[in-house]
Amino acid sequence: MADLQDEPHSVGIGAEDPPAPAAPGTQASALERAAALLSVHPVADGCNTLVWTLRQSPYHDIETPDAGVDTDIPRLRAGGVGAQFWSLLVPPRGGPGEGEGGGGDRVVSDTLDQIDAALTLMRRYPDSLCLALSADDMADARNRGRIASFLGPVPGRTLTDSLGALRAFHALGVRILAPAGAPWAQETLTAFGHEVVQEANRLAILLDLTGCEPAVARRLAGASKAPVIISNTGAAALNPHPGNVTDEVLVALREAKGLAMVTFDTARTGDSLHAVADHLDHVRAVAGPDCVGLGATFGAEPPTPRPTGLTDPSGYPRLIAELLDRGWPESDLTLLTWGNALRVIRDTEFTARRRSSPAGA
Image (cartoon, rainbow, N blue to C red; front, side, top):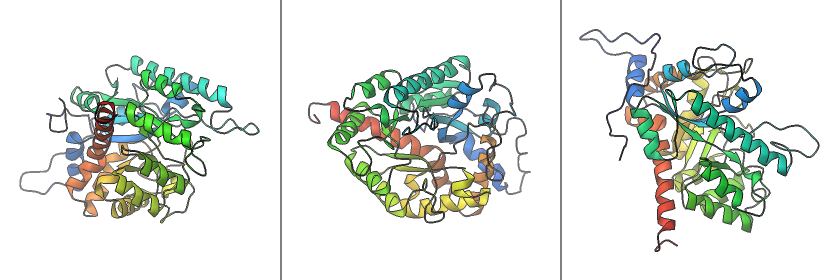
């Protein structure tokens, strides 16, 4: 069984312009230490919207540097990204009464198109991207020099009064579901919402609470037997943006052994690398080092405002260097980049196996 202790491969951190090794007898710089850390414990990034972008602009070739989009394979490798959660959500269509993806039938068809586009992306770049369905796949992809690619989240609005769509998505490779905006997870968690949580636990599908109202997020975290995640967020205590997570939800995540993944969205986390690091400091302080991760929300075409120093995935080593300078121990950084995401996926799979066993039925 592959695991974090397996001999890792280099994910190509700074492959185009790597930091020079420290001279004998001198102390390595923070950036050199960051590059060394990421070569063993790469980034598992919780949110990238490239699938939707490529559906709108299919001419992009992400195998080579592409100034027309902020994500490509060279910059993923330069930043030390070893696993990526590819968002399958679509932007709001803007019609009257329509939320993300439009009406019920439309949101299902849009989601299926997103899944198809993501799978096509894996097939187009097989030497770099590898579909991942499990924690073992995540570790194996890293060790084989590929970026483990998880499909999801898909929108919870695709589920109305039947769990069939959730099982179908799972069969297609989806491993993350976003309840935000679903009628069963608005002001409260309905009886059907509890059924969704139980079935997601049984299927080893992660629940992504991004965008949920705080009260609903706490109920979902408490109802789930498996850890939950927030794939892209900032700390509301530092910036009261509606997309940011409150300290009460961070405490609930800590109790549920979940994961809050901090975004690089200027509106939510500020316009500099230092501001993003402030949010990471706060989430780590409130939720604990075992419950903090990274979910940049790259994958867009310019102009998209990004914090200075974190305009694309190649900026990850600079962020890790900043955290080293702030006194983060390397053990906490290995959890931030890779260990926490791997643990949450493994724990979700363990919950599914336990629920499927006669004793857990």
